[in-house]
Each structure stands twice: as C-alpha cells, then as structure tokens.
Image (cartoon, rainbow, N blue to C red; front, side, top):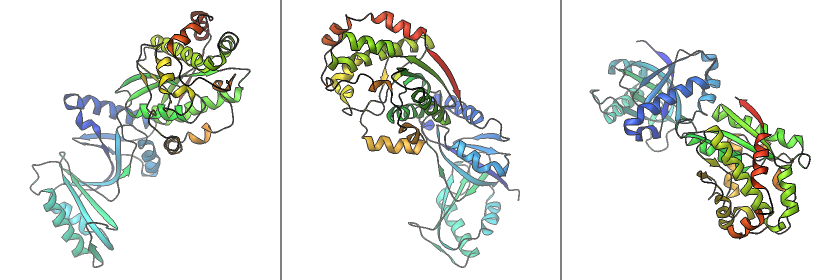
Length: 386
C-alpha cells in the first residue's frame, strides 16, 4: 500500500462561479505558486481540492503559514494520500492509534465510489474501535476527528486537522484598486478586506513634511510592507500635501478645512487611478467615527469623483477594526506615535454636516487643478514586494 504525505488545500466560494469556475481555480493555483516561489513542491488539481505534494517536510510549517495568506483558500490539511480501494483504506485506518473519544467524517466526492459517505464513516468507525481498545465513539464533542476524503483521482486522503485559512477570492480576480493608506489602524484593514475580495492593490499616502516627520512616512511604508504578506506587491504613491494644506489654511473657512482636504485627496486619487488603470478607490472610513465620516461629509467628498469608492469598514465598530488589525499583523505598526497629514492644521470644530454648495464656493479661492497636477507630478513611487 503506497502512502504519501501531502497538503490538501480547500477553497470556498469558487464553487459558486459556474462556467467561470475554472478561471478562478487557475488563478488560485498561480497565486499559490507565486506565494511559494523558492520552495520545492508540485500541485495537482482534483475537482474541489488542490493537492500540494513533493515538498520538503522540514519546510511544511512555513509552507502552511504562507498558504494561510493565499486568498481563496479556506483550509489546509496535513494528509496522507492512499489508493481509494476500501481494503487499502481499511488497512491504513487499522494502524491508526486513537485513545479517548472520536468520530469519523467521510466525504465521497466521487459518486461512482461503491460506498456512500455514511457507509464509509460507519465502516471506518468499526475499524478504529476494533483496533483501539480505549477508543469510544462520540459524535458531538469527540477528542479526535478522523477525516477521510475519496476524490475523483482515485485517491483517499486521511487527516485529523483542518487548518483554517483567510478565505475570500483569489487575488486579482476582482481587478485593481487604489487604497488611501494613512498611518492609522483603519486603512490597512480596509485594504486587506478588499484584497480578500480579489482586488490587487496600489496605495497612495499623503504626507506634509516638515509638519509631519520622515518617521511618519517610513511607518506607512512599513504598513504597506506588512500588507504584502497578503497581496505580494504594492506600488505606493507618496504625495506631498504640504502646499495644498497651507493653501487651504490660508484661503478657506477653518471648519471646512478637513472637508476640502478630503475632496482634493479624492481628486488626486482618481487621477492616479486613471493613470495606473485602476478601477476603484478604497478608504478606511467608518460611518460616524470622526467628523469627516458622517453621511453628509462622505456625500460631499464623493461628489468630486466618478470612480467607485469602496468603504469596507463603513459599518464596523472601532473594536472590530482593531481586532482585524491585530489578526493580520498591522496593529502594532499603526499605533506607533507618528502623526499623519490629517492632524496638520486640525480645526477645533470641524463641520459635521457640510454641503456641496458651500465646499464648491470655498474651493473657488484655490487653484485646484494646479495644486492637484503639481502634487501628482512630484509624487514619489515606491514598489514594495513581499
């Protein structure tokens, strides 16, 4: 009986994609190969599963950690591959040592197989009981779950544990978008969540040197680097916002400073999107969290762009956002005490219910096109790779 250790890779929503399913699966496999570039392995596809084999067992744990960050995968299992003939399966399972409570979970993906999933579970449960005096069946809260999957390739995969991955859709399946990346907690989480839905990311950061420090810029570069654990590569556009903020401070009502600042940021972001052929803008806004994130403020900000603006955190509490940031590894960098440009010239009482009419009136005192074009022409671009 030939046995082989493999990693059984499971994917989630791809089965919903109908006739496009194979394109999503192909993209997922390419993303896995890119994520594991430099490691020895091979991939085999069998309907509903990807088999990663011929890898160095000493690298197994690091490979699994990298696979967990491949969007589209929902689980990884350390499995043993054997021929799916029932006598082979029975012989292998009879050699498994189990003490305490257990149950068997079987999956017959190949409906041509002579035993149903329930029949296979019952038969293998009997094998375990006959081979282990101290084993006892518990279908509700067992100490051990023994999984057996019969696939279309004529193989059965035996394993104990399903290691959870981040899920989502394969990176690149949803297009490309531009993330407004500040130095805070929210925007990296927003980028992560949209990447999880298949979007490749570029990012733009607005800095106001010398009002903000070089450390603040380096902090954002580090946040982008941390996001590359999930998106592999980010092209970061670093845009000086100093002159724009000075002009706003000198020419506009204090209470509207943040509103007009956000409107100009969105104009710059849209121009970068059109230059880079990106299909949407992503922000880390959460409804009502600050003055610039009220419904009225968001409406006034949106009115200057025509591209879609994705706000994945719009209904999230701050605690929810912080939990995700900690889980994806950006939180500790985000809370470093370096200011961002949104803290420069901060008004004491920012307007929380701005109007488009008033914002447009105040912008007449600025040369918006000149400021936007000058900022983009002098941008610094950094390509950050995982």
